[in-house]
Structures are given as structure tokens and as C-alpha cells.
Amino acid sequence: MELTFSNSISSTLCISPRAAFSGCGCRVTSIRCINESQRENQMIVSITGATGFIGKRLVRRLHADNHQVRVLTRSRNNARAIFPAKEFPGVVIADESEWKDYIQGSTAVVNLAGMPISTRWSPEIKKEIKQSRIKVTSKVVQLINNTSSEIRPKVLISATAVGYYGTSETQVFDEKSPSGSDYLAEVCREWEASALKVNKDVRLALIRIGVVLGKDGGALAKMIPIFMMFAGGPLGSGKQWFSWIHVDDLVNLIYEALSNPSYKGVINATAPNPVRMGEMCEHLGSVIGRPSWLPVPDIALKAVLGEGASVVLEGQKVLPTKAQELGFPFKYRYVKDALKSIMTTQ
Ligand SMILES: NC(=O)c1ccc[n+]([C@@H]2O[C@H](COP(=O)([O-])OP(=O)(O)OC[C@H]3O[C@@H](n4cnc5c(N)ncnc54)[C@H](OP(=O)(O)O)[C@@H]3O)[C@@H](O)[C@H]2O)c1
Image (cartoon, rainbow, N blue to C red):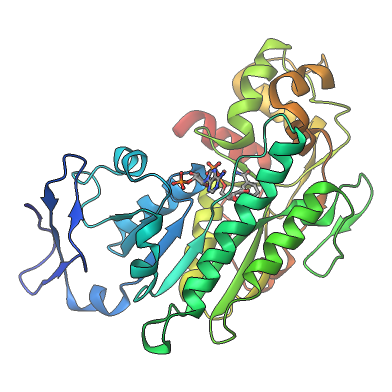
């Protein structure tokens, strides 16, 4: 048994609803102490895709603020390795057969699961990219809908992407813009349609995520080595739009959406100042100390990222109109500051 004590004498003991099991099969009961006011605001959040680039940061944030986190995963062992019980006491790991039990009684569900898109796109992989998102979203929605109202989560935050709008070098997109006609737009439409089937009493926020910047994952982690190899020039023509968001801002936005009832419907998760790729690479070059003059050929990117390179070779200018109307306080509004912070502090 592991005991983790924090806070004052007036603390209340909270024990995970079901005992978690450690990798060795031993019962691990985590007890955390929280005070009365924390207890009132405590959320119970079930998260799919919690083991990914964004999910890991979200779990860490929620856990640090004493919320209860339930990791809904396909692989208990992998999730336990990412969230060891010692470092994450109280975080429940649930494999697919247990998702139902844990979605019941959760305050909210965050749905981030999906097969990575930065790969070679064979017809089979394209099918899997789409199906993985629709399958998990439909399952989560069905489990929420089948739960009786007293124990049904009140909120579903479901990921989607700015790929919804298609690509353009000239248009500007916000939440009211129509969907595009390419493959990623189709994926996003069907992904969102699965989430929209959730019970109408559940507050649904569809977060259309831009390119998430962080050192330990996403496009930037893949771009940096290619960029270094080619003396740091623009990727592709450099004219394509790059609608980015710092991972901390994205996590803050999801966090806010969990508890703020005004966060509903489609919300673009992109920084207020998207840039063209040439500008993005200039800043990246200056931050990592590489001159930015020799363009990285499309072929080199495609060799590493397959057709998934389209995410950085073709882009869209997307504005976070709704988040700004809601007064969301972006910490990183300019890509230069975001890159500086990522390359120096993470
Ligand atoms: N990162 C970005 O720049 C970005 C931009 C726009 C949209 N998004 C969307 O935001 C979500 C989270 O992004 P991320 O970068 O954190 O993703 P990620 O690191 O690739 O993690 C996604 C998670 O989804 C689960 N998963 C992977 N393959 C799957 C499959 N075939 N079927 C079902 N589940 C699968 C995995 O969790 P388990 O193994 O634990 O089940 C994995 O940890 C994704 O849906 C992504 O499309 C991300």
C-alpha cells in the first residue's frame, strides 16, 4: 500500500473507486489527502489517448491539481510505464474492457485517441487513421449515452483538427468556415460526427487542434532533425500557413473547457498569430542557431513523414475566434516566444 500525504490536518482521505493493480499484479491502493475546498472542486476525468504527446501533459497537469485521473488505454502495461504509481498516485489505468466502469461516475471525458498521421499513407493506413478515431469516439459516446443520468459524465471534450478546413494559401478560417474537400477534412468531419452523437445533456466541446508545438512529440520533434540536416531552410515552399499552438496553451484550454460551461461546440485551438512556414523556420533557425536559407525539399520530408508530411507542406490559416471571444488567456501568442520557451526550458 502506498500512502501519499499532502496538505493540512483538515484533509479528507480519497481512495480510488477501484483498487488499481501494479504491473506485478499486486494491489496498489493510493490514498491522497485533499482539503475540503479542493474536494468540492475536484473533477474525475477519464482520458483516452492519455499516453500520447498531449495526453501525458494533460494528465500531469490534472494530477498536480489534485483531480482524479482515469487513463483509458488500449495497453495497461504501456500506460503504467508512462504513469508509474509511485509518481502518479491515484491515477487509475483502465484497459478497454474496463472503460465502461470508469466512464461511469466521471465528471468529464477527454477524448484524444487516434493513430498518428505523420506516417506513410498506404490505403490501409489511411483507413486506420480514420477508423481509429471514429471507433474510439463512437465507443466513448456509446458508453456515455448508456450510462444512467446520475452517474453520466457532464462534459465531453473531443479532439479534432484544423485539417477540417482543408488547405489554402489565401483563405482565413474560423469556427464558422465550411469543411474542406481533402482526405484529412473528411477524417475530421466523420470524427466530429461521431462525437456529436453524444447525449444532448452532455456539454460537448470539439477542439479543432492546430500543429501542437512541444519538444517531446508532435510535428516539431520530427521537424527539428530534418531541419538540422538541411541547414535550417523553410520546409517546402515556405508559403504554406502554419497554424500552431504551444502544448501548454492547449492543455490550459482543455483544462478550462472541463470546468467552464461557456466552452461548448467547436473551438479552434490555435495561437492568435499563425505564420507562414518560411517565418516559422526563420524563428526556429534563430532559436536553434541554424541559418535559414536552404529550403528543405518536399522529397526529404516525404521520405521521413510519408504523405503525413502534407501537414507541414500544405497548411491553413486558422484563427482562434471562439477562444478569444471566451477570453482565453494565451500564454504564447507569437511563434518566436513559443519556440524560445520550448527550446530552452522543456
Ligand atoms: N499533436 C498535434 O499536433 C495534433 C494536431 C491536431 C490534432 N491532434 C489530435 O489530438 C489527439 C492527440 O494528439 P497526440 O499528438 O497527443 O497523439 P499521440 O501522441 O499520437 O497519441 C495518441 C494516443 O492515441 C492512442 N492510439 C494510438 N494509435 C491508436 C489506434 N490505432 N487506435 C486507437 N487509439 C490509438 C494511443 O493511446 P493508448 O495506446 O494509450 O490507447 C496514443 O497514446 C490525436 O487524436 C490527434 O489527431 C494532434
